[in-house]
Structures are given as C-alpha cells and as structure tokens.
Image 1: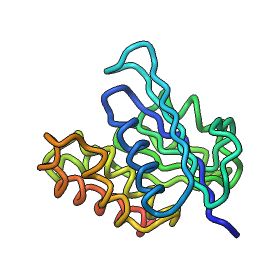
Image 2: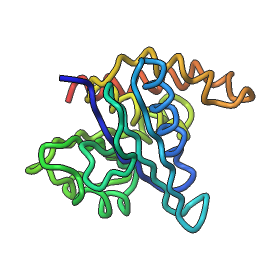
Image 3: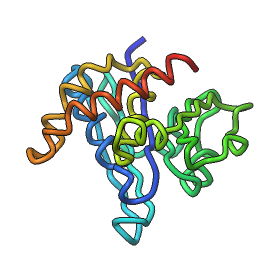
Image 4: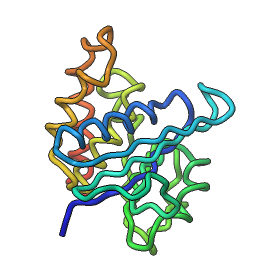
Length: 183
C-alpha cells in the first residue's frame, strides 16, 4: 500500500503551528512524497487560532482540502474542540497535554497520544519549541517517514537568523519522538 497521510495541525497563533506544518511538508518532499500545505489564520496572528492542513502521499494528491483527517496535532483546547470530532474513526490525535486535559480526548474512538509539549520544551530551555516536540511525536507515531528528513529540512524552513537554533530544535524533535515511542 502506498504511503499516505493527511493531517490538520492546530493551535493558537504564535505556537508555531504553521512552522511545523511547513516543515512536515518540506520534509515530505525531501523524502520523495507528493505534498500539499494550506495555512489557515484566525482573526489575530498571535493569540488567535491558527491551523494548517498537510497531505503527504506517494500517489498524486487529488485535493488539498481535508474535511475528515486521519491525523491531528492539537496544541490547545479550542483546537481540540473544533477538530477532534472531525477526526476519522481509528485516526491518530497527538495532543499537547500541557494545555489540554486528557479527559477530553476521545480515546474510545481514536488513538490519542498525550505529549506534554510545553513541559518538555521548558526542560530543554525554550518553551517556544513545544511545536517541535509535538512534530517529533507525530513523526514517530505515524511512521510516515524517518525523523532525519525533518531534521535535514530545518535549515531550509527556518530563516537564516534562526539556524543557530537547529541543534535545539533537533533535540526537541527527538524528545517528542521518545515520548511517542513509549506510548
């Protein structure tokens, strides 16, 4: 069966949702997949809601629009409320348990992996890397690709002034992958 995965990644503006969506799409291209990436912004850039859709496939992609995704990365409670009901039965939900009560997860219908993204990022020295922790967990949990294409894509997705943070982001990706490997 051909590799295929679609995802909605959602959270507050400023949580780096668009960055990890873009990084996932770019890494997919590096890994030889066809990709689509569509960002969706709420009324405010920072603090408002933000989400993006990413489709990764070995086959041609018929439509970049996803109504019922097979996977989610959810960084905040409003995003859980909005997107979890749309997740396909048996789908995968990576949930930032730092900001979301896991009692709200629909664990009877879908696979939910609690990832304390903010706490892990804090321990690594930068709360703003919570998004990378979530993406690392997602890559590990889905198996859509190895983590290396994601790490290799950091230099292409991050602006040059942030290249000094590539080692820290790599550490955050690996930390998230470790959590998912134990789930």
